[in-house]
Length: 362
Ligand SMILES: [Zn+2]
Ligand SMILES: [Zn+2]
Image 1 (cartoon, rainbow, N blue to C red):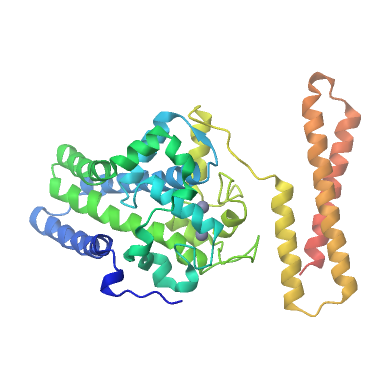
Image 2: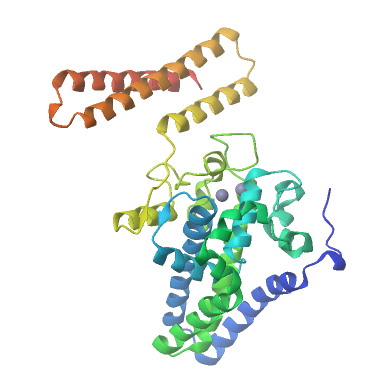
Protein backbone atom coordinates (compact mmCIF):
# COMPACT_ATOMS: atom_id res chain seq x y z
CA UNK A 1 0.00 0.00 0.00
CA UNK A 2 1.44 3.40 -1.00
CA UNK A 3 2.11 5.64 1.97
CA UNK A 4 0.33 8.97 2.27
CA UNK A 5 2.32 12.07 3.21
CA UNK A 6 -0.80 14.00 4.23
CA UNK A 7 -0.40 16.63 6.96
CA UNK A 8 -2.04 14.48 9.64
CA UNK A 9 0.37 11.61 8.91
CA UNK A 10 3.51 13.73 9.14
CA UNK A 11 5.88 13.81 12.08
CA UNK A 12 6.34 17.59 11.94
CA UNK A 13 9.56 17.76 13.97
CA UNK A 14 11.32 15.14 11.83
CA UNK A 15 10.00 16.60 8.57
CA UNK A 16 11.05 20.15 9.41
CA UNK A 17 14.43 19.04 10.75
CA UNK A 18 15.29 16.99 7.65
CA UNK A 19 14.12 19.62 5.19
CA UNK A 20 15.52 22.69 6.94
CA UNK A 21 18.99 21.40 7.87
CA UNK A 22 20.22 21.14 4.22
CA UNK A 23 19.02 24.73 3.57
CA UNK A 24 20.69 25.96 6.78
CA UNK A 25 23.89 24.11 5.82
CA UNK A 26 24.09 25.89 2.44
CA UNK A 27 23.12 29.34 3.81
CA UNK A 28 25.58 29.17 6.74
CA UNK A 29 28.45 27.94 4.52
CA UNK A 30 27.91 30.80 2.03
CA UNK A 31 27.65 33.23 4.96
CA UNK A 32 30.89 31.90 6.46
CA UNK A 33 32.86 32.17 3.18
CA UNK A 34 31.49 35.62 2.38
CA UNK A 35 32.05 37.11 5.81
CA UNK A 36 35.33 35.44 6.87
CA UNK A 37 36.73 33.95 3.67
CA UNK A 38 37.44 30.25 3.12
CA UNK A 39 40.05 28.60 5.36
CA UNK A 40 41.14 24.98 5.64
CA UNK A 41 40.88 24.66 9.45
CA UNK A 42 37.07 24.51 9.76
CA UNK A 43 36.84 22.25 6.69
CA UNK A 44 39.41 19.76 8.00
CA UNK A 45 37.90 19.69 11.48
CA UNK A 46 34.48 19.18 9.81
CA UNK A 47 35.85 16.19 7.89
CA UNK A 48 37.28 14.82 11.13
CA UNK A 49 33.87 15.04 12.84
CA UNK A 50 32.23 13.55 9.73
CA UNK A 51 34.49 10.49 9.93
CA UNK A 52 34.12 9.85 13.66
CA UNK A 53 30.35 10.40 13.54
CA UNK A 54 29.94 8.14 10.49
CA UNK A 55 32.01 5.38 12.03
CA UNK A 56 30.08 5.68 15.28
CA UNK A 57 26.94 4.85 13.29
CA UNK A 58 28.44 1.96 11.31
CA UNK A 59 30.82 0.40 13.84
CA UNK A 60 28.77 1.43 16.88
CA UNK A 61 25.03 1.79 16.23
CA UNK A 62 24.99 -0.81 13.47
CA UNK A 63 27.54 -3.60 13.95
CA UNK A 64 28.14 -3.37 17.72
CA UNK A 65 24.77 -2.47 19.23
CA UNK A 66 22.23 -3.66 16.64
CA UNK A 67 23.94 -6.87 15.49
CA UNK A 68 26.28 -7.64 18.41
CA UNK A 69 28.93 -8.54 15.82
CA UNK A 70 31.62 -8.01 18.49
CA UNK A 71 32.05 -6.89 22.08
CA UNK A 72 33.64 -3.59 23.05
CA UNK A 73 35.22 -1.89 26.06
CA UNK A 74 32.73 0.39 27.89
CA UNK A 75 34.78 3.46 26.87
CA UNK A 76 34.42 2.49 23.20
CA UNK A 77 30.70 1.98 23.71
CA UNK A 78 30.44 5.40 25.37
CA UNK A 79 32.33 7.03 22.50
CA UNK A 80 30.03 5.42 19.89
CA UNK A 81 26.94 6.38 21.90
CA UNK A 82 28.03 10.04 22.12
CA UNK A 83 29.10 10.45 18.50
CA UNK A 84 26.33 8.16 17.21
CA UNK A 85 23.84 10.56 18.84
CA UNK A 86 25.70 13.38 17.04
CA UNK A 87 24.35 11.98 13.75
CA UNK A 88 20.81 12.97 14.85
CA UNK A 89 19.30 9.63 13.84
CA UNK A 90 17.62 8.98 17.18
CA UNK A 91 18.89 7.01 20.21
CA UNK A 92 20.40 3.57 19.64
CA UNK A 93 17.40 2.06 21.48
CA UNK A 94 15.08 3.37 18.73
CA UNK A 95 17.59 3.07 15.83
CA UNK A 96 18.64 -0.48 16.71
CA UNK A 97 15.05 -1.68 17.26
CA UNK A 98 14.02 -0.29 13.85
CA UNK A 99 17.07 -1.83 12.24
CA UNK A 100 16.44 -5.29 13.67
CA UNK A 101 12.83 -5.04 12.48
CA UNK A 102 14.18 -4.13 9.02
CA UNK A 103 16.29 -7.32 8.96
CA UNK A 104 13.55 -9.55 10.27
CA UNK A 105 10.75 -8.23 7.99
CA UNK A 106 12.79 -6.97 5.05
CA UNK A 107 10.79 -5.94 1.95
CA UNK A 108 7.43 -6.40 3.68
CA UNK A 109 4.90 -3.89 5.01
CA UNK A 110 6.40 -4.26 8.49
CA UNK A 111 9.86 -3.25 7.27
CA UNK A 112 10.23 0.36 8.50
CA UNK A 113 12.19 1.37 5.39
CA UNK A 114 10.61 -1.02 2.90
CA UNK A 115 12.14 -0.39 -0.55
CA UNK A 116 8.97 -1.69 -2.21
CA UNK A 117 7.30 1.53 -1.09
CA UNK A 118 9.65 3.38 -3.45
CA UNK A 119 13.12 4.90 -3.38
CA UNK A 120 12.00 8.15 -1.67
CA UNK A 121 10.20 6.29 1.11
CA UNK A 122 13.15 3.97 1.85
CA UNK A 123 15.61 6.86 1.74
CA UNK A 124 13.93 9.54 3.83
CA UNK A 125 10.13 9.43 3.43
CA UNK A 126 9.68 6.86 6.19
CA UNK A 127 11.15 9.27 8.78
CA UNK A 128 8.56 11.92 7.82
CA UNK A 129 5.71 9.67 8.91
CA UNK A 130 4.28 9.49 12.43
CA UNK A 131 3.75 5.72 12.23
CA UNK A 132 7.51 5.19 12.14
CA UNK A 133 8.15 7.44 15.16
CA UNK A 134 6.75 4.72 17.42
CA UNK A 135 9.09 2.47 19.36
CA UNK A 136 9.43 -1.17 18.31
CA UNK A 137 10.46 -2.14 21.86
CA UNK A 138 10.09 -5.87 21.30
CA UNK A 139 13.15 -5.78 19.05
CA UNK A 140 15.28 -3.98 21.64
CA UNK A 141 14.57 -5.78 24.92
CA UNK A 142 18.29 -6.38 25.52
CA UNK A 143 18.94 -2.64 25.18
CA UNK A 144 16.77 -2.07 28.27
CA UNK A 145 19.30 -4.03 30.35
CA UNK A 146 22.26 -1.94 29.16
CA UNK A 147 22.74 1.05 31.49
CA UNK A 148 24.86 3.02 28.98
CA UNK A 149 22.30 2.52 26.20
CA UNK A 150 19.43 3.64 28.43
CA UNK A 151 21.45 6.63 29.65
CA UNK A 152 21.92 7.69 26.01
CA UNK A 153 18.20 7.13 25.28
CA UNK A 154 17.22 9.32 28.25
CA UNK A 155 19.59 12.19 27.45
CA UNK A 156 19.64 11.76 23.68
CA UNK A 157 18.80 15.39 22.77
CA UNK A 158 21.46 17.12 24.97
CA UNK A 159 24.09 14.50 23.96
CA UNK A 160 23.25 14.97 20.27
CA UNK A 161 23.35 18.77 20.56
CA UNK A 162 26.67 18.77 22.41
CA UNK A 163 28.58 16.22 20.31
CA UNK A 164 26.87 17.02 17.01
CA UNK A 165 26.64 20.84 17.11
CA UNK A 166 28.41 22.50 20.04
CA UNK A 167 31.67 20.50 20.05
CA UNK A 168 32.46 20.88 16.29
CA UNK A 169 31.68 24.62 16.56
CA UNK A 170 33.91 25.02 19.64
CA UNK A 171 36.81 23.05 18.12
CA UNK A 172 36.84 25.18 14.93
CA UNK A 173 36.43 28.36 17.00
CA UNK A 174 39.15 27.63 19.55
CA UNK A 175 41.72 26.06 17.20
CA UNK A 176 40.99 27.77 13.88
CA UNK A 177 39.35 31.05 15.02
CA UNK A 178 36.11 30.46 13.15
CA UNK A 179 33.06 29.54 15.18
CA UNK A 180 30.87 30.28 12.15
CA UNK A 181 32.96 27.99 9.91
CA UNK A 182 32.78 25.27 12.56
CA UNK A 183 29.01 25.60 12.83
CA UNK A 184 28.51 25.68 9.05
CA UNK A 185 30.83 22.79 8.12
CA UNK A 186 31.48 20.73 11.29
CA UNK A 187 27.89 20.87 12.58
CA UNK A 188 25.48 21.41 9.66
CA UNK A 189 27.21 20.19 6.45
CA UNK A 190 28.50 17.15 8.34
CA UNK A 191 25.01 16.41 9.65
CA UNK A 192 23.41 16.53 6.19
CA UNK A 193 26.19 14.39 4.68
CA UNK A 194 25.90 11.79 7.45
CA UNK A 195 22.12 11.72 7.14
CA UNK A 196 22.09 11.01 3.43
CA UNK A 197 25.04 8.62 3.46
CA UNK A 198 23.28 6.55 6.12
CA UNK A 199 19.95 6.81 4.27
CA UNK A 200 21.67 5.47 1.13
CA UNK A 201 22.09 2.14 2.96
CA UNK A 202 18.30 1.82 3.16
CA UNK A 203 17.63 3.12 -0.34
CA UNK A 204 20.45 2.65 -2.88
CA UNK A 205 21.86 -0.45 -1.15
CA UNK A 206 18.46 -2.08 -1.76
CA UNK A 207 18.34 -0.74 -5.31
CA UNK A 208 21.65 -0.94 -7.16
CA UNK A 209 24.37 -3.58 -7.27
CA UNK A 210 24.74 -7.34 -7.44
CA UNK A 211 23.34 -10.29 -5.51
CA UNK A 212 26.29 -12.68 -4.99
CA UNK A 213 24.90 -14.38 -1.86
CA UNK A 214 21.10 -14.35 -1.95
CA UNK A 215 18.16 -13.25 -4.00
CA UNK A 216 15.71 -13.79 -1.17
CA UNK A 217 15.60 -10.03 -0.51
CA UNK A 218 16.37 -6.74 -2.26
CA UNK A 219 19.73 -6.04 -0.56
CA UNK A 220 22.58 -5.45 -3.03
CA UNK A 221 26.38 -5.44 -3.00
CA UNK A 222 28.22 -2.53 -4.64
CA UNK A 223 31.78 -1.30 -4.20
CA UNK A 224 30.86 2.30 -5.01
CA UNK A 225 28.23 2.45 -2.27
CA UNK A 226 30.87 1.18 0.15
CA UNK A 227 32.79 4.44 -0.44
CA UNK A 228 29.76 6.51 0.52
CA UNK A 229 28.78 4.43 3.56
CA UNK A 230 32.00 3.58 5.44
CA UNK A 231 31.94 0.06 4.01
CA UNK A 232 28.25 -0.75 4.33
CA UNK A 233 27.80 -1.05 0.54
CA UNK A 234 28.19 -4.82 0.68
CA UNK A 235 24.62 -5.05 1.82
CA UNK A 236 23.72 -8.35 0.12
CA UNK A 237 26.44 -10.06 2.17
CA UNK A 238 25.29 -8.21 5.28
CA UNK A 239 21.64 -9.26 4.96
CA UNK A 240 22.67 -12.90 4.53
CA UNK A 241 25.35 -12.97 7.25
CA UNK A 242 24.17 -10.18 9.51
CA UNK A 243 26.14 -11.22 12.61
CA UNK A 244 29.51 -10.94 10.81
CA UNK A 245 31.60 -7.94 11.93
CA UNK A 246 32.60 -7.43 8.28
CA UNK A 247 30.44 -6.22 5.41
CA UNK A 248 33.21 -6.17 2.81
CA UNK A 249 34.32 -9.72 3.48
CA UNK A 250 37.32 -9.81 1.12
CA UNK A 251 40.52 -8.14 2.29
CA UNK A 252 40.57 -5.65 -0.59
CA UNK A 253 36.93 -4.59 -0.27
CA UNK A 254 36.63 -1.04 1.07
CA UNK A 255 35.27 -1.42 4.57
CA UNK A 256 36.84 1.09 7.00
CA UNK A 257 34.35 -0.01 9.67
CA UNK A 258 35.81 -3.54 9.56
CA UNK A 259 39.35 -2.13 9.74
CA UNK A 260 38.40 0.02 12.74
CA UNK A 261 36.92 -2.97 14.61
CA UNK A 262 40.01 -5.07 13.81
CA UNK A 263 42.26 -2.24 15.08
CA UNK A 264 40.20 -1.97 18.28
CA UNK A 265 40.70 -5.72 18.75
CA UNK A 266 44.47 -5.34 18.27
CA UNK A 267 44.64 -2.76 21.07
CA UNK A 268 42.37 -4.88 23.30
CA UNK A 269 39.38 -2.55 23.12
CA UNK A 270 37.22 -5.03 21.18
CA UNK A 271 36.82 -8.79 21.39
CA UNK A 272 34.77 -11.80 20.24
CA UNK A 273 34.57 -10.62 16.62
CA UNK A 274 32.02 -12.78 14.82
CA UNK A 275 33.20 -14.29 11.54
CA UNK A 276 31.16 -16.44 9.16
CA UNK A 277 33.11 -19.61 8.24
CA UNK A 278 34.61 -19.48 4.72
CA UNK A 279 32.72 -22.66 3.71
CA UNK A 280 29.37 -21.01 4.40
CA UNK A 281 30.26 -17.91 2.41
CA UNK A 282 31.57 -19.95 -0.50
CA UNK A 283 28.57 -22.27 -0.39
CA UNK A 284 26.18 -19.29 -0.67
CA UNK A 285 28.18 -17.85 -3.61
CA UNK A 286 28.24 -21.17 -5.48
CA UNK A 287 24.54 -21.79 -4.88
CA UNK A 288 23.72 -18.30 -6.13
CA UNK A 289 25.75 -18.94 -9.27
CA UNK A 290 23.89 -22.20 -9.91
CA UNK A 291 20.57 -20.37 -9.58
CA UNK A 292 21.75 -17.67 -11.99
CA UNK A 293 22.82 -20.35 -14.50
CA UNK A 294 19.43 -22.02 -14.19
CA UNK A 295 17.66 -18.73 -14.83
CA UNK A 296 19.92 -17.53 -17.62
CA UNK A 297 19.90 -20.53 -19.92
CA UNK A 298 17.90 -23.65 -20.53
CA UNK A 299 20.62 -25.85 -19.16
CA UNK A 300 20.78 -29.58 -19.82
CA UNK A 301 19.98 -31.69 -16.76
CA UNK A 302 23.38 -33.45 -16.93
CA UNK A 303 25.20 -30.10 -16.95
CA UNK A 304 23.37 -28.88 -13.85
CA UNK A 305 24.04 -32.19 -12.07
CA UNK A 306 27.72 -31.89 -12.94
CA UNK A 307 27.83 -28.35 -11.57
CA UNK A 308 26.05 -29.45 -8.35
CA UNK A 309 28.61 -32.25 -7.90
CA UNK A 310 31.44 -29.84 -8.48
CA UNK A 311 30.01 -27.53 -5.83
CA UNK A 312 29.93 -30.42 -3.32
CA UNK A 313 33.54 -31.31 -4.19
CA UNK A 314 34.71 -27.73 -3.65
CA UNK A 315 32.97 -27.50 -0.28
CA UNK A 316 34.15 -30.97 0.86
CA UNK A 317 37.77 -30.29 -0.03
CA UNK A 318 37.63 -26.87 1.66
CA UNK A 319 36.13 -28.42 4.82
CA UNK A 320 38.82 -31.14 4.77
CA UNK A 321 41.56 -28.54 4.35
CA UNK A 322 40.19 -26.37 7.19
CA UNK A 323 39.92 -29.40 9.51
CA UNK A 324 43.49 -30.50 8.77
CA UNK A 325 44.76 -26.97 9.24
CA UNK A 326 43.15 -26.80 12.68
CA UNK A 327 44.48 -30.25 13.65
CA UNK A 328 47.93 -29.27 12.41
CA UNK A 329 47.87 -26.10 14.52
CA UNK A 330 46.63 -27.99 17.60
CA UNK A 331 49.49 -30.53 17.41
CA UNK A 332 52.02 -27.88 18.44
CA UNK A 333 55.54 -29.38 18.47
CA UNK A 334 54.35 -32.72 17.23
CA UNK A 335 53.75 -31.42 13.73
CA UNK A 336 54.90 -33.94 11.24
CA UNK A 337 55.70 -34.07 7.57
CA UNK A 338 52.94 -36.50 6.67
CA UNK A 339 50.23 -34.26 8.12
CA UNK A 340 51.63 -31.29 6.25
CA UNK A 341 51.58 -33.25 3.00
CA UNK A 342 47.96 -34.31 3.51
CA UNK A 343 46.98 -30.73 4.26
CA UNK A 344 48.71 -29.57 1.11
CA UNK A 345 46.89 -32.23 -0.94
CA UNK A 346 43.52 -31.11 0.41
CA UNK A 347 44.40 -27.50 -0.50
CA UNK A 348 45.38 -28.54 -4.05
CA UNK A 349 42.19 -30.60 -4.39
CA UNK A 350 40.17 -27.54 -3.38
CA UNK A 351 42.00 -25.25 -5.81
CA UNK A 352 41.67 -27.77 -8.65
CA UNK A 353 37.91 -28.14 -8.08
CA UNK A 354 37.54 -24.35 -7.92
CA UNK A 355 39.43 -23.93 -11.22
CA UNK A 356 37.15 -26.53 -12.83
CA UNK A 357 34.17 -24.58 -11.54
CA UNK A 358 35.51 -21.36 -13.05
CA UNK A 359 35.83 -23.11 -16.40
CA UNK A 360 32.42 -24.77 -16.36
CA UNK A 361 30.09 -22.41 -14.51
CA UNK A 362 30.17 -19.58 -17.04
ZN1 LIG B 1 18.97 -3.43 4.48
ZN1 LIG C 1 22.19 -4.52 9.62
